[in-house]
Image 1 (cartoon, helix red, strand yellow):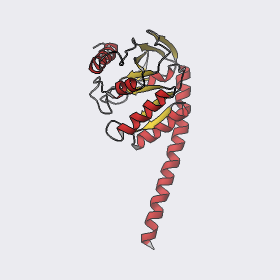
Image 2 (image 1 turned 45 degrees about the horizontal axis):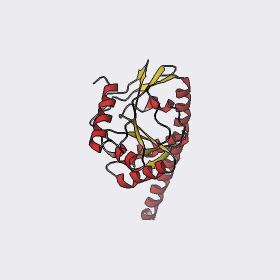
Image 3 (image 1 turned 180 degrees about the vertical axis):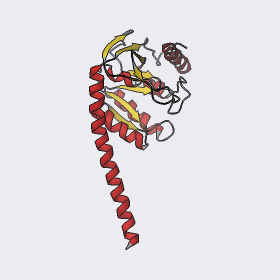
Image 4 (image 1 turned 90 degrees about the vertical axis):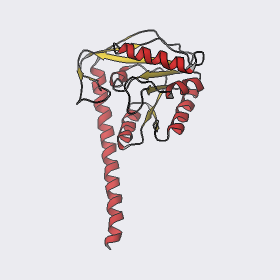
Length: 215
């Protein structure tokens, strides 16, 4: 009897965890919507060409303020296969993003193909380009490959805010604008990886994103 009970307990635990994730996703997206609505936002930098998909590129830790960026087309993003990624996927989905699951270390190729397919179907995409664990500012090739395959353009983005919440020290120096703060979204010139050689495009993107950081 005890042997039968263990699988049932395990199943019950999984169902409870899934229910909690769904609740956290619902509450999290409402909190984020309220937070973003409280910001005073302005956007600076050149407008990217609208005739081709945009692949928005930012560094880890600089994504929160970009939730206020206006979306003229659906935007596809990647979320990891971890439990945190599952929660992130639920929240992003409720915020209107299209989500594919994967990372550079797990199911990277299928996830990248999912993003390319979405770009070719009329979406834009958003990438944290310096990998899941850094080093901070070290641009990897995923966004460049996706933009090249889908005839898209790379658009460097970051944000600055008058007041931010910064949790305990992390490798990406994560920043979250506080309620009612002034948020400036900075946009760099678009980079065309179809014309520019891949390594040159990576270097130009990295240079622009580090320039945003004052480096």
